[in-house]
Image (cartoon, rainbow, N blue to C red; front, side, top):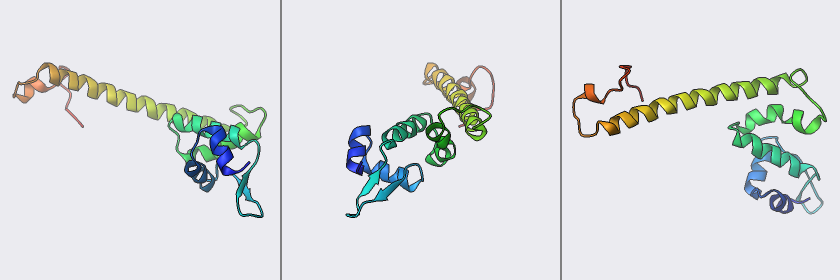
Length: 133
C-alpha cells in the first residue's frame, strides 16, 4: 500500500504519516520507483496511533508501548508494564490538569460575579487561597 492509499484509508494526511514514520511508529520499504510501500496492517497501526494521540500521548510516548498493541495478540499489565505505567501516568497528568482548570473556572466565575469591584479583597475567591495563574 502506497502512502497516498494509506492516507485515504485512514483519513490521515500524508504529512502526518511521514511524521509517524520519522518517529518510528510506522515502517515502510521503498519500491523500485522510490515510493514508500506500507504493510497491509499499517492502517490498523495508524488507528492505534490516532487513538493514543487523542488520549494526550506524544508520539515518543506512543512508540514505547505501541508494540504491545500491534505485535502481541494478547497482552496485560505484566507483559507490557511500561505501557500500563504510561497510561496511569497520563491519567494522573490529565486529572491534575482538570483540577487546575476547575480552580481557574471557579475563580473566573467569582471574578465575573464581582465584576466592577476594584478592591482586590472582593475579587479573591471565598476560600481565601492565594491567587495563582
